[in-house]
Length: 189
Image 1 (cartoon, rainbow, N blue to C red):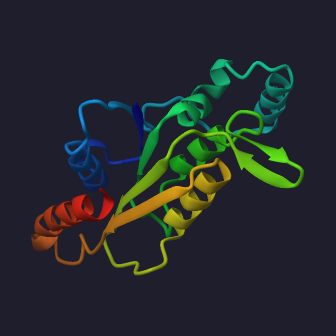
Image 2: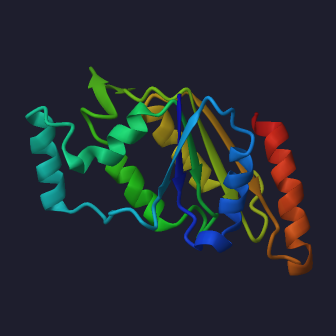
């Protein structure tokens, strides 16, 4: 059984979102294999017309094991997925959007039956972890977007967890994060 962690923690080791998912991974049963994809180190760039044409040609030829699909195939084959991204500019860092474009491939991670999109991913669940300097309340456009993509790709169980208010009073940030981590364990397991 494999857990894929998609790390979009732009600030690297200083990232509070990274600390959040690392705390979650401490609870993972040893029978699970954890694969961490650090998007900061991935070979990702926005898709252009030539990329789309190549992708379509490869899918049409049935060459879905081509390196162009390495991220889509890894996502498709994971049993559980964690996406960790800070709350930035009302959603998440743009690098996560680029990654989601790379994994959303007709003929690899989803297809169509008539007019309905049908997901091919085998993951039983996707957990979206985030941190935020302020307070966002009920509306987290980043989480909502990832939830919609997960549903399109066939992942029915989606949970989102955000630790908020980390920048309001910097002297309380560490305590807020620690309390949030323990709340995350209780609410997501």
